[in-house]
Every structure is written in C-alpha cells, then in structure tokens.
Figure 1: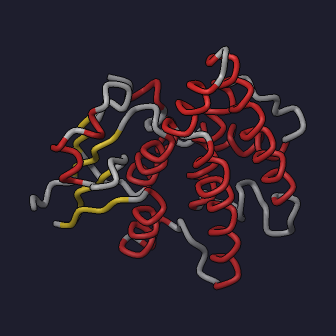
Figure 2: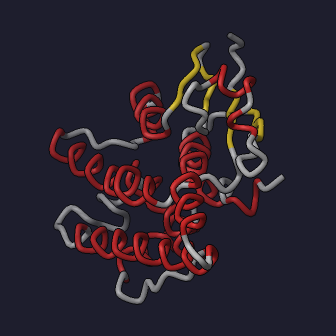
Figure 3: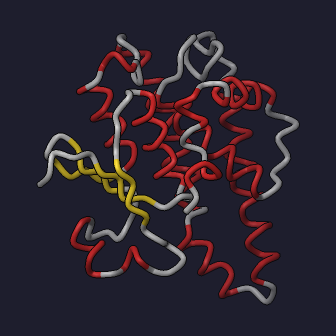
Length: 213
C-alpha cells in the first residue's frame, strides 16, 4: 500500500463530499481518482477489489485503506484531533454523532442511487417519482434535523462555534436538498449554518461544482 493519500470518489456522492470536506479541513493533500457511479465503475472488479461493497468513497491514507465516510471522518478525528471534528467531552461527542447519524444513517440511505433507481423502475413516471421521493424524505429528514438544532449546544454551527462532523454531514445534504428543490423555508438554523460553512475554504473546495471532472 502506497503512503500517498488517494481518494476514490464520485463528484456528486454525498459520502465522498463529506470526506473531501474533512480532508480539506485537516489540510491533508490527496489525489482524487474518480469512480463514475453512473457508468457502473463502482461495480467493476477493479473497484470491488478496493471495497467489496462497491461503494465510494475509499481512502488510502497512512498506509491503510479505509471505507465508510463516517468511519473515515472519525479516523481523521482521532489521528488529527486538532481538527475538532468531535468535541472533547463525552456528551458533546454523543450529540455530534447523533446529528451526523441522523443524516448519514436516516436520510442518506433511502435517497441513494440504488434505492432511487428501484423506485423509478416501479413507477409509471420515473422522473416524477424520483423528485417526489427526494423531496419527501430529504424534506422530512431535514425538518427533524432543524428541530434537533433547537438545543443549547447549537452555536454558529451544529454544535458550538466551530465545524464538527455534524456540519460535514449537513452541507452535502443541503446540496442535495437544493438540487431537488426541497423547501427549506422552515429550516432557518440549517440554512444559516450552511451559509457559514460556505465561507470556509475547506467546504468550498470540496463542493461538487469545484471537483466535477
């Protein structure tokens, strides 16, 4: 395994977007290797050898090969603790994990490529079904997330006054919400946090429009 940091990702993948943000925030230089999900490259033997799940991202770092975006971010939090992705106190860490999981384990899975493709196949008007599906599940999920932010520990960001893993998860989900024209008028905290994150180079440089092949 090379010691070069290499990210195998897809420009529009939410999970890949999270890891790009995290790598940027810790100042980790990396080489990006695109894996075209629409072309089925994630199912090719070459990529299955990297990750038998056929998922992105895959990260080669520190002589190791890592999968699963949140596990990768937690690895960075533990090996580069100065980044502050997880709070120092146990209750704070629990809250940041809960917020992160609310997006990565609740909203994201029902809106991923494979699930939505199946929904489209079963519908008479696949495109209309996809849009309705995205608006429903992203909208409901973010409305609940907005309510979770009604907590004393919410600051300028999801938890406190600096970005954590929760913000790293939130921003790609907002990108998806905007893509599918989800109504965010009832989510002022989310919208404000997203705007603050956009002012940070590590977030901006990871945006899909900046890395699209």
